Image (cartoon, rainbow, N blue to C red; front, top):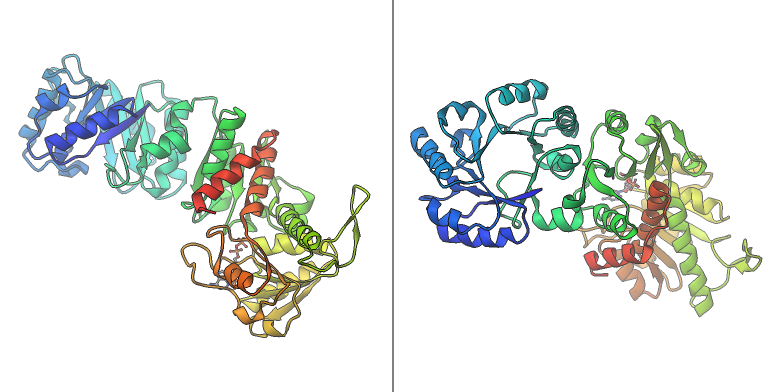
Length: 504
Ligand code: ATR
């Protein structure tokens, strides 16, 4: 169930928000501590959904400034008015002599951490006579969420449990899968009642929280940062379109090895891997496919019966979209034919053979592309800000490296940017000076947001053949989806979602 807290500061605004929230929520929470003089009669009369009445003190992170007797009197009044639920801090339960027909949610909050002994805390609240236990803590580590899930799995008692803060967001999404009675979502941005609260729009339309249940399979994105990723938008919509009971969430992770261990325990079925974990993850997997092994970087991890296998869909996705661009450019006459390559279907493909390719960057994406292009017979030069990394990658991939300040001396047929330079929000930057961009050069920027980076704009203006990262991103995600689920990905839907979100 989804509960929307009403955090309006006046009775009139609260009545408006109650009406609005009732359109989307299963239940609403009336935060009367936010209102200076709450008119409980009027407020409760205007509700159309079951309500939780909460009057949180400053001590427990609320806004009620009056004395304790007044605070409890308001809660008793809510009970007299037959509010369905009343939230009482677990250590104040003794102050409620008669709970009438209301159910008491006994709540425990920790705004700085997630204690280890959640089962002990839970047991003592159950003993105190609660109808429903609510435990809300602050996540300082992604693993704190797992403590909540273990607690929920182990108890049969009606419980609301999740973590606050950015790192706790996944517990707000996944709590209902593990038996949590409800999650809280704000009516909109700026109307949150606690840190890390998702909007009702994200809960309903991105994560489809109302549809999650104990059979829902968990997938996600492993990286740091993860908050701006398109992954949750495309994978969740794709699960829905294909009719798979699964959810995809962002995991903001610093320590890969302990997270992957826990992911097995939670039976997380698959992970996309992004910056900065594509290379380090390789060390903590049970198996790794040939492409990913050669590259030394994974962007996809699949859990098959408790064994983690790494794959790399960046490589085929990049080569595929680049090859198609070159083929189209040759067909349209914009690009001269290089050497003819025999195609698997018996014809011939003018793609990358013998072309002079410069790759900007030496991270995971550069590795994937360098190894993929090498197989196509191109001549590759790696150029990177930290030259030592370019040298290392060049040595491994059997190609050349060049210092950044010498790039103007290089003959270039195809220039590929794999760095994050020019990516949102630093959209006014380009990884290379525009004078090196020559008419007829193919310029591929794997950045997809914005769809036209400064590099691509300058390249287009100078007569280059340009390709952005949208097709590559969609292709790698589609291949990932197919590895995750064994089902064909709804590619058109994925591309539409990306283009809509980046206005491309
Ligand atoms: P990914 O796995 O996506 O390739 P990564 O491994 O973190 O990500 O690599 C990021 C690449 O972008 C690196 O080549 C990095 O250059 P350094 O090795 O010199 O750090 C490059 N990069 C990131 N920010 C950059 C910037 N402001 N200027 C130039 N290169 C940058």
